[in-house]
Length: 245
Ligand SMILES: NC(=O)c1ccc[n+]([C@@H]2O[C@H](COP(=O)([O-])OP(=O)(O)OC[C@H]3O[C@@H](n4cnc5c(N)ncnc54)[C@H](OP(=O)(O)O)[C@@H]3O)[C@@H](O)[C@H]2O)c1
Image (cartoon, rainbow, N blue to C red):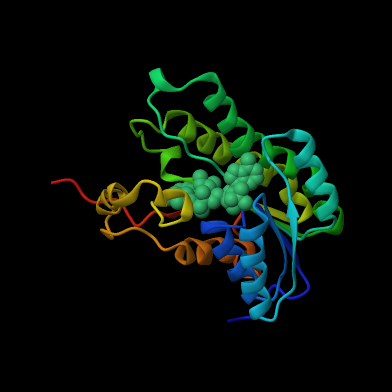
């Protein structure tokens, strides 16, 4: 593995599980120091152990992203970061008629307002130092209608829109902002769907679910100097669209 992120600090939200943990490990393997964010201290300890086994350094910063004050405090404790991965997210699938206001608000708070507040707090510092990379984790639900993924997909579509705006706002100062749209991926969060989730894998051209490490590699590429001229893009890591007929 290359060492192209040496001396860089990366804040990865939701790094206590799934895609976030795999991304933290992929960035650590490239030499970055990692700020592991999440809520669950036991899960965080597991991520820290795995990062330290790679010879990289890491620390845990807990925060509940539902609360704006906690998001802002997280950004303050994180300090000067070179890389921000907005990965933490929730997905509680329900059709529109069954989506109560609390579920609606929770998606907006965690999936959309938290990344917004983190970019607002951290991107100006990156711009002041003349470099930075932000990667937002999106989903196929941003662009493909799903029965039950309405408010979830809407938050991801909005995050993709903000990705393009932020790329234009901070790009002139050397900060690249991109998104990775993940396909159906085996994680702690999707494990609750059991075998039913397998069918989501059959709906993509590769005919299987993704491993979190496969999404993490795409995210790490977008955060790395190798993607130096990629800005405002949404990279599809969705296994491909099957052809009709
Ligand atoms: N898995 C998929 O099929 C898939 C597909 C497309 C996109 N995505 C996106 O990829 C991202 C990660 O998904 P995943 O499947 O890896 O999720 P996951 O296994 O459920 O893990 C979610 C992570 O987010 C953190 N988190 C959730 N709510 C939080 C809150 N209120 N405050 C702070 N942290 C919170 C969790 O931290 P704690 O456990 O420590 O609380 C955990 O680290 C999400 O944005 C999701 O929308 C996933």
